[in-house]
Image (cartoon, rainbow, N blue to C red; front, side, top):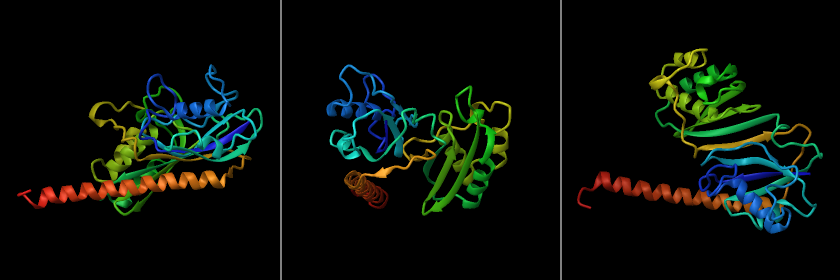
Length: 272
């Protein structure tokens, strides 16, 4: 049994978990393992397979973790030879035969980059503090069970962004993105801080008073903690993954510059 750290750009995918007829990260992993001969053509998934979490469509990851039975030669660099460029394995750990990537995760941490140039950092921090601790988050998820969670929320300013970090043992559906939404609303003055007390209260908060789900793209699964498990980086795989995401970073900067040039041209020159 071996566990792998997987990084991916979630934008091309309809989420992590495989679905019929649409591309998912999990399908990419299984296709790679079939190409390597680790997974039989008619098998649904590898023996012992489990994943740390099921990220939504558009959500990215640094440390998604999958584990399954595989031969010793099945390394991150071997997997990357068959994975699409947007999905990279970069570290691995040998684990016990009873290891379960979902159930054995003690802590999961997400980061959300909130574009909020007009945000008040002190208000954002007050919102994060109010959301931290054990609460029933039933108004911030469509789930009917598992809504009581002990969550740590922190925020810091980074230029025009607020970087929201959220950690817990596990998360109900959409919780992190709705936490991002309510922190953004308080930080920009669209909601009073007192609204958080109402949202965390026992009564349902319906209609326009409810908290919308923030967009998926700025969310990254940053860390998954397994006590007693040490992941070893594969130098060749790390280099490959770093190169892929550096190229995507540059491409993003280019797109930003082009979009800004067009915007400024439209605003500043009516004769064009």
